[in-house]
Image (cartoon, rainbow, N blue to C red):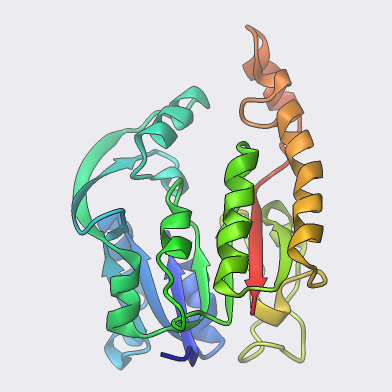
Length: 266
């Protein structure tokens, strides 16, 4: 089915700050979030949008198969994950999981079959992002998408671009999430209505034609990631500066390279 011009998927709703931005811009939103407490808070705060039908909140985790799945809850809720390896990573970074709860698991394409193909697909689900991208089935392809990109495993990054180009995406932007607090929405707007919004570090920010930077080829985007990977190898989560007995102290004094999203357009 063709994408629906007024529909956005927010996969990894978290505290719904992105969802609220998309709603204010005039889009319908399917927001997927595994954490039941975050879902309840968003449903209460955005009740008018839920009741009008502009917002649908799906309390579930995008997973490999349909059915119950373990969700590792972290004190830093943006680090909640269904991946045990990511829970282990969080512990190594000083934030071990606080609890494990069972939540419904859904296969991504079942969401598309039920709710339609979005104009824009935002994905930010710790360690499971590619389940959404690999779950796309042509011709049910969003015009735009963004995904939190791989920053440690080079082969995984190349696989990400292989899947995206195989789906038909030809234009790309590499956008640092750590820059969002300094970014302003363009006026007049390039997507939906103008919204005067100041973004946070946990936001996915602007999207589509409003995402900052110029569209480039896959090869040019991969070249940009070569530089980012070099930064991570030195001062990233498990970089050279993080190792040894003084690693945690050194990392507190060193600026992290931050997270990056890959934006793609047909």
